[in-house]
Length: 623
Image (cartoon, rainbow, N blue to C red; front, side):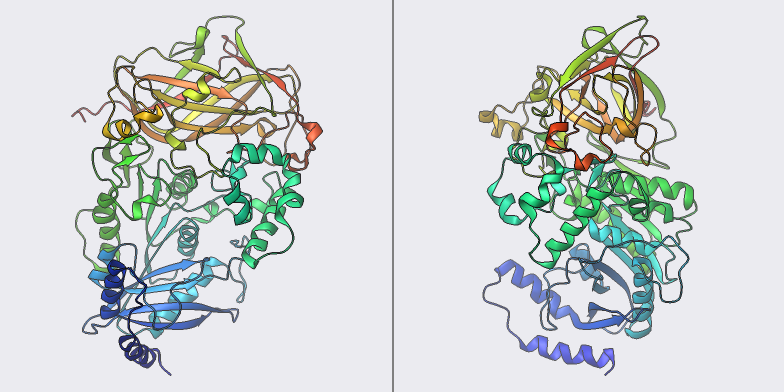
């Protein structure tokens, strides 16, 4: 039976079936609209190795013209199932279904499959997510009627990974791809690790444990070392998806260093000679996948310099740009809706131009939201060419200065105790996805004795940072291993008035006066100071240099504000605890290995701990 005939049979059945009385009226109306305008079919598309992937296709009923494809590949299962079942929305936003596309939703090879991109030359039957995308597109353009021979792909988070993988060695019909918050390298900054340090919230805990233990700080502290997790909480039975996650967890525990296991799971090195137009999307307040779009875009600047590429980063949490107004985050009010601008002025025009030749103004290479001033700005590259690096030094009495220290010997110290780690949030949160943490008020940490605090004088003019922040630590420990967390904070003046969002929560003590807003922060595990593949212990008492980068920011510290820096050695339970005693595999450390240690942070002429700030000069035409 031809696909065209199948579609027509499904259409007759679909029209005859009533909507469920259990569907809310608004959703029922949306489903009815999709049903009235689109014909659905479910097929299995063969891949080159013989595997057939389940695919749902929604084609416009109007067959007087041809349409491009919009394709979405997911490991989470295509829904709704059944040729007579329709969703309430097709495509990234309702505007797409209103304009007319052929929408394709496909199951990838399933959650139990360990997704990798092959590093070796492919044989005729070798497969990965790139070949599966290629084979699907090839089948679609040959078998689905009324298509114009053009395909666009999109996806957020895990589905963003599949959109990115599909760009590699792409089918000629793939003209546009939008990987949104894609995890590009799990080891360095997406989902599972921050610079190789484990994110505890990624443990594949059974739902009942998460539900019954809202206090993640207490739960993970009582769990003990990582080696205890499997035996205590996971078990060796459960649904396939849970067992797949557990198997990956066990593999993670066996591979603490950046070895071949991790390298073959990184997409960034493969982003060479990309042919489709690309739209990367991320959120400054995304606690899960900010690194992905930033690192992927940077990789393409070198590997695919001629590709038509746009990077968009807005003031959003994970995937928040896909719906709603997004006029605030936490206790910060933007004074405007930010997500509709992206959906209407960036995302839809991007696909409409590449797939339908409906081209207006060309998108800039970087469309970035400037936090602090709450403005959208465009650049021809990211970070902007105009950025000037400036060193900001730790000084005596908790000061920060652009002038280097002159002292011959100067340092500050604190005791880090793994049994009493510094919390990453004051909220009751089990995992890493506490919505407010990326901008959380840091006053709860400022008063702790195991957190060093430095700040500038009130700024006499605006200070705008645009790009990654360099960190150069001159440190020593009484132990043989250590973590160092550096946080950059915007301190509001004490006379800052409350905004309406904060006033609504005034009873809980949340005020903008003196607010210490987290702007960016990250961890570095000292054992990897020379190589992520070859860890080395620290020598007790010996001064050591640790250089790393915090992820990009685009933030203005306004006149009268202060820039504050925290340095600490625990950030729990966002990051797992370092025993502070070197063990070959940190994931197999015993409880007895966890020891308090004294950390020294130097701020002398020869050992000058400092940050390298990417300072963007004020626009000559003003803001």
